[in-house]
Length: 84
Image (cartoon, rainbow, N blue to C red):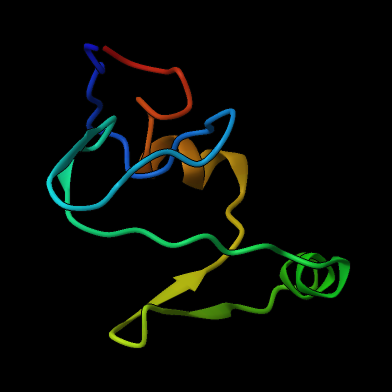
């Protein structure tokens, strides 16, 4: 199976996919992944301007924030369908 890769750092997908042991993903080859499920309280915190800190496999931390549309386009135009 051929998987198209992207320069985007965030993309919508229909469901989680294999991302371990050198799997080819839309972001290129990856060796690990995790699933985070946001609750209504998490979404409310984001909408209130707070940042969520996510513990990734007890090794990394990801900070999740909302962005205004203009900021999102500037930071990730290809992931939003803009640009080449």
